[in-house]
Length: 410
Image (tube, rainbow, N blue to C red; front, side):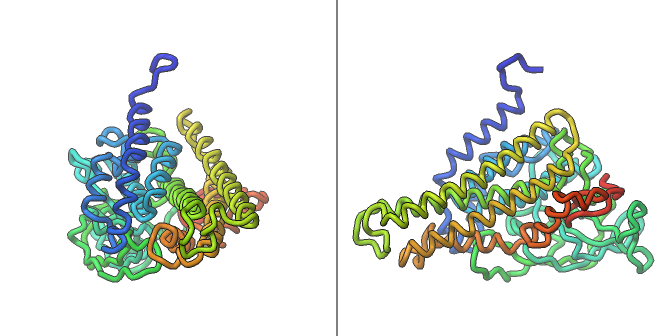
C-alpha cells in the first residue's frame, strides 16, 4: 500500500496519461481537417495515439496497459474528443475492443493476442454474425457495419450468435440464444470501402465481412462478461459500462469545443459573415449563450458524478450496482441531448460561418452522427425509466438493454 498522500504507481501512470492527452490535444486539433478529408485517421494521428499509450488505457497492467479508472478514462477521452471528435471516437471504440479482450479472453488466447505489445482491436460487437460450432471452436460468417477503428486494427472484436447442429444454441442460464464476442485476426476480414456519412467522417467506420473463418473457442467471450480472466477491478465494469463511458466522453468533448468556438466567433473582429460580427453579440445571444453554458455544465457534472461514484465502487473491489449502470445510460442520454441542442443553437447563431468547413460546422455534424447510435436511442432511455420507476427489479443491464436477472455474465 502506498504511503498516505503518495500516489500509487497505477495512479501516477493514469495521471501521466491525462497530462499527455492535454499536451497532445493541439496536435489532434491541427490534424482534424486532414483526418476528415481522408475519411480515416491519418498515420500521424494514429502514431500520436500510440506514442501516448492511449490504446492501452483500459488494458490490463499484466499486458503493459494502464488499467486506468473509469473517471480517468473519461477525462482522457473527453480531452481528445474536444480536439477532434473522430479521433476521440476511434480511441474510445478501440479501447472497448482492446480492453475487453485483455480482461475477458482466457489466458492462453489473451497471451497470444497481446504477445508483448498492445494491439489495436476494433469492430462491431453486436451479434450480427453466425458462429457454427465446430470441434473446439466456431465457423464464423457475417457482415458487420460501423466498424469504428478497423482501418487501423490488427484484430477484430466482432459479435455473433452461436449455432449447433444447425439450430441456435441456447444459453442454459436464460433459455435465450447464445451470443459471443469473437477476437479474429484482421487479415481474415474483407474490409469494404463504404464510409460516406455526414458526421464523424474521420472515424472510417466501414463495413467488413467474414466468410467461414475458424475461431477457436478460447478466442471468444461473453459480450456481458464482468468477471476478469486477467486484470483487476476495472474489468468488473464490463462492456456494458465501457461503452457508455466512451460515448459520454465524446459528447462532452464536442460540447466544450462548440461553446468555445462560438465564443471565439462572438469575440472576433467585425466583418465576419455572421450575425455575431459585433463583438459579443446582442443581449439575446448573451442570454442564450449563458443558458447553453449552464446546460452543458449541468450535463457534464451528472456524467462526472456518475463515473466518480463507479470508480470509487471499483476501487473498493465491489461490483457495480444496477442503479449505477442505469445512471451511466441516463447521463449519456442527457449529455448527448444537451450537446445536440447546444450545437443547433451554435449552428443557427453562427450564421454563414456555420456553413463553411471548420470546427463549428464539424461539431454540428459530429454530434448528430453520434445521436444515431443505438446506445442513445429512445429504447435505452425507456429502459432507464423502467429501472428508475422500480418496475425492473428482476432485471439487470446487459449490452443490449435490460435482461432477466438470472443471466450468466461470466
